[in-house]
Image (cartoon, rainbow, N blue to C red; front, side, top):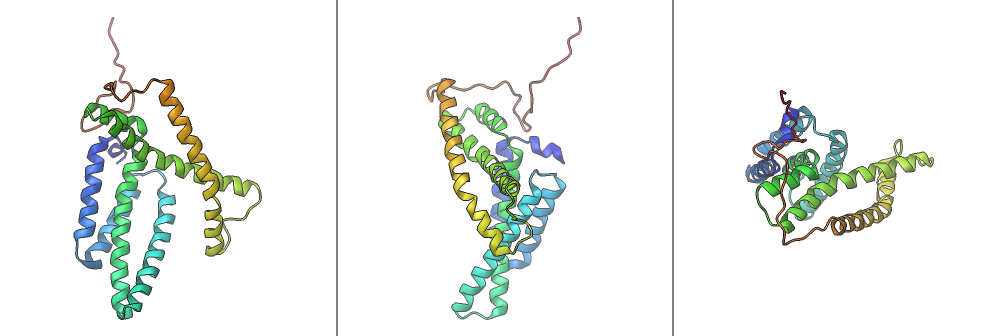
Length: 224
């Protein structure tokens, strides 16, 4: 299943959009919940990096969506049974959508995105936006985990605590994460200037880009 990670970025992106459309077009929770379960199982079977972290985030997202929708529908006068089913369908749609794009983000390196965009002859600004959008999110997640490790190293108990306390500590990571994101953006802009990035020049790639994107430079043995 790990071979799926090397699929062309645009193939993975198109499949993710199709999964998202299916999630939002299926009627109610009866189809939405099985589709969400299949999406999560796919992440597990394909060996998607960061799967455990995604499960934690997806569980929290489900709880928040369910609670907010049930409360809103109860205020509007809907019965508790109907409100729960509607909220469950909405949560299932969001889980399916996030699972599809989580796979794209976690299995697409900035290099593979650049190679696919260059092979497709996209404008440089589009290539830059796509690579930064899908490449920065996993980097920010890794920074978020490193900040949590730093909190543990300083003696802050963030694991075996009630959920409200854990959420408060998670929000406290937002400030250093924002600072790190600004520093990373500055470093990227400086690197682009150093390497002479020019929107007027077409980019090339050494990778073989087709249905799959070659992860490294192919070296063939030559007989003397």
